[in-house]
Length: 457
Image: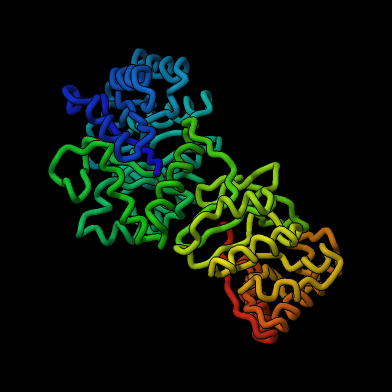
């Protein structure tokens, strides 16, 4: 398990006596990267010095809104110089607006925030945004910045409406130890609306220590105590949350944590087989167009594993609810490999599901449904449209107009062989389209599942 604390003020005096010990404890708990955000020119300098000294430490340079009144040309130039000339400076921040304490005038806070965004644009770096009771102005300034701002709103404290606006801008969101507090139900309800793919972990050390150590100094090792909250919130495992948020942090901040393509990958209590990246459809909604990853697993690969490699990789399958032939493409392009691996899984008492676009008969120039009997327990077919015209427009199959009819024949063939069949479609086809797909499923004796756009895994 690898963890990233994306916001910890290790340059503060709180860590003067035992910083090495703090970092040692963080490493022992699986923390592989920490980001120290500057809050003044001096603080940014210290953050860079720590990043130079410790391999796991990265820096962010910025001036906190509390210090907006004191941020003159000298300070601004220093922050810009630091961010420009250091490879381990991965962001601009901590910057933003604070209308709660108002240590600096609102006018100067806004000027500083706008200047910080201009710096982020010029240096092509993400921003770490501080917001306290200034959500409306934060959003307005981000929208009027003149470019697509990348970054995170850290220690999120707004309501669901603000959250939606932040997410609509493409920003990430993070919460601190307060997400673990017993009376933080309202905050957890807001956090529940953050897609896992847009969540980062942070401690905001030395502040806001999570529940087990509340009242004591916070430190990066305690970031692991956030995992249990998100585990319950998303119905994932702690390992899933760690992997997803670490990938998110690496995507945003470029922390050198790129993963290798996987052959098998676990999500929750299921094990997936990344059989192929080839596909006979070029779906307009396909997640492959946006990312090489699903739930933090890298699936994009130029090679295809052999049946022997897959079987060796499977290991002990007894702990999984089912083994799923999936991947970043259409599995039935490798039918013989499916049959060989599925036979092994069945010999070990496993349950097997095939996720497919239903083009297997066309791909293999024969009716393959009988060959799946006894090897596949459940087939999940991506119908996605209630008629041929809509399917071709949405999924752009290489087999053209015969694709839809062949898919329906495949579904009926699987049912005739006694296989459980699940028909799925995306919510983007509208309520009427969804109802028609549900009826198709009912007519052929299949179950039905509605999928959300951009929710994968």
